[in-house]
Length: 235
Ligand SMILES: O=c1ccn([C@@H]2O[C@H](COP(=O)(O)O)[C@@H](O)[C@H]2O)c(=O)[nH]1
Image (cartoon, rainbow, N blue to C red; front, side, top):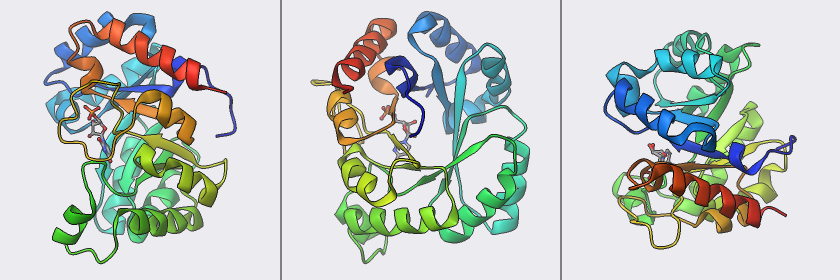
């Protein structure tokens, strides 16, 4: 990551909420404690995509996490449509055809394409069950090399792989890490997790945090605590 970001701007809050009203209420609760939001399946499919422009116009950054994966032409047309929304990041799965189509289609829109290496809810046994021959570490590494060759802007990975990947891809590819759990937080369905401080020390550029904030009794206090942890861990 070339730019030096403030701790708050490295935390991406996943707005995994059932409606636009619920998401807007959460954004109001968080106020200045959050500057970067992620819109994924739940909110996008509940009419949340127009929020991208509204948030961008309000000075917030937005990550559209739709994890595109289809034939190249369909991915390219989808990226063209999404690039008009004003988002900062868009995810695709880290398959070569998909990544090539997305990188070619983003044009000079300013949209950055992130490749999802291996979902943070997967471990080696899950990959084997899905028919993969490689374990998590090997598949993440292979996909990182392919993504870099294709010209991808960033990788989504677990913080467990961040230090290793930083050594492979160098400083200019953003490492965006879900699977963040403050000490004592419920793990849920995530399998490859770290605390915010450890993720930052491992080399993550951005931390994606959903349930530990949006399901907290006091989301603003939860977000402030994570930002404080990021600040303390930043060297
Ligand atoms: O590998 C991945 C890719 C994306 N995600 C998304 O991040 C958030 C994490 O939410 P938590 O509630 O903090 O677990 C969620 O929107 C996922 O779709 C991921 O977890 N892992």
